[in-house]
View 1: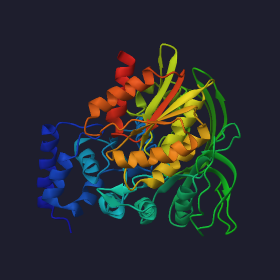
View 2 (view 1 turned 90 degrees about the vertical axis):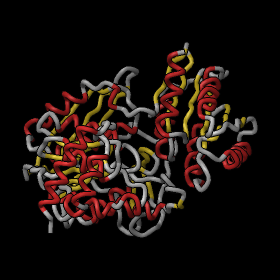
View 3 (view 1 turned 180 degrees about the horizontal axis):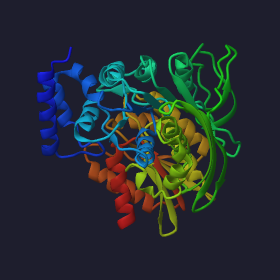
View 4 (view 1 turned 180 degrees about the vertical axis):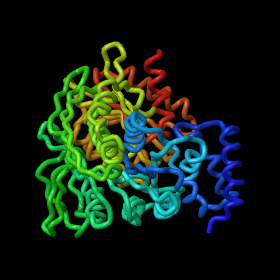
Length: 474
């Protein structure tokens, strides 16, 4: 039972806090949400969320959350007024947006690292979303707050964000067996719209078969698109669902890409089936953003109340994209006097593979890989990273600690050195980040190779952005 006196006091206090807070990226910070929850309690959040006439959409996954959320906000804002938050992946950021903004629908990024900190089932119950959007699920954050975080627990946390849904629709990636399995298990409770790739033009540089999420046996793949995403079946009967929204063709150009996308899905808000055909011209924004594009378009077509606008709105947004929608710290290729340096964070195997595939478009000569390593208790991430490195087969490798442990970085280096005897190791300290940034910049600039890829683990966005700035501005 909501105490409405406390609720109204909390709401007013939260709105005052919104005016006083220094706004953070996307959501305007989390302090107003903290104020509201402290006064009214968590159980008052459903009353606050009920003010959204069209409900809330939560976006989660290992990679692509922020970009997908940003794109979906761009699309949906053409049709209706929305409340939104991105990059701040905690419940109080959502509450802050509910307090601080006007709109009939909420679009909220919600990153989940583990069960304890992510509280996904609690978030689902309190926000009661009409939609959950899944990007992809892969190995990441094998330790959280110094505690080992098994992948099974991480995957369970992602599933819990939609497990309790009894209304609405799930939008999920059918090329990813893990996210597809989540959708298949919810088809009897809610609508499920799948998105994926359906063209042989895209093929991974070295696919990664995974265990069937239903029976645990190794899946059989007939085609890999990106890491464990592709066309798959299992002897237990589990297989890739047919996509409702699919990329059917792509033409790669040096300055732009042409995408052909077909859609046939159920629009939850208007309660009817719709079809659409799109031809989009976008910047050469990387293979991972093909999936982010499909996720955002599918979510938009699933939840917009103005179905007649779908084709016009999607074309308007994507045919006029600038690269500002890509979050800072992400991978990009910099031309420094005819030398091409691809750099950006790649904190898990999926992200590193994406970076490698993007860089491959530029490489037509010998190249160097400057690899920034994971930390203690992150052997699984290193194993995924190293598979990508070997698939690229660089002509020279430099290894630098990407996190705190120099000792662990040297262990990873010694493994690499067995296959690449000429590999070099630079034991740069995490505590002296300015020195590390200067040295990484120097290594790339002074490389003997025309092409250099620098990626791996690091201080999230900050380190990579600083390196880019130094490289571009010098």
